[in-house]
Image 1: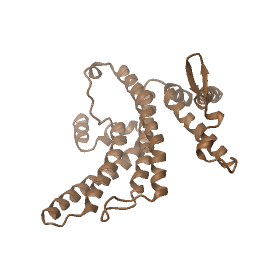
Image 2 (image 1 turned 45 degrees about the vertical axis):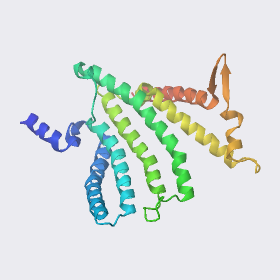
Image 3 (image 1 turned 90 degrees about the vertical axis):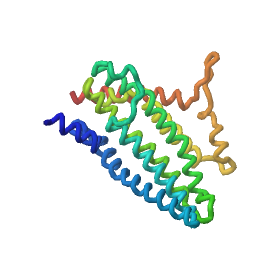
Image 4 (image 1 turned 180 degrees about the horizontal axis):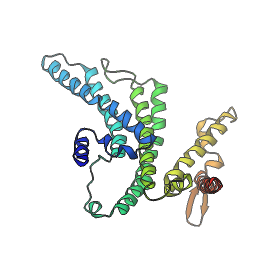
Length: 265
């Protein structure tokens, strides 16, 4: 009976599968995902309305824009939901034959070492993209379209934070199936992602402080050319000073978290 209920739940609501194992992050993502799912019926109504109006000779540019807005928002929110509920499509001929622990290790590698760094990169790239749109009060190319396009671009940037939360909460839940998910272990087994975040925090913090205390004749580009944002050359290789600092800070963060964990134990 329990298996039958699980099958029914899997068909009707993937968010109910394994709900007892969900942490706060998982429940947060599933909750917002369920709300975002209502964008799809609204999108269907918008598409049908536009088709009817266009055939009647009353094309509405704002409906075209609305379709893209709704579709973009729903898909981005759906990515986080799919990660938490494991309802995304897998194209893999090996994964299904792995034992349970090997599947978990594979998922952790894919989430914390590959997918999350990519999502952080997407957030970083779209951050300035969104800010530029907000400053310009960007609108639709069509006079009759939906204006305030900066709203969509700002939402797109925030949606990557939502996806990152989904990935991290899923990663922590999976890690808990292999070992006690102490904070230092979370940082260690997601080293590339944590280092990337530390690098962004360090970079933007330094840039903000230096920009606010800059010489009046300097602009943002001049601040970006300061030595701290330069590169350290060793042999034929180069590394930005901010990246080197991020690596050191990440290792220090793991060590401190480990010491606190040992103290609490």
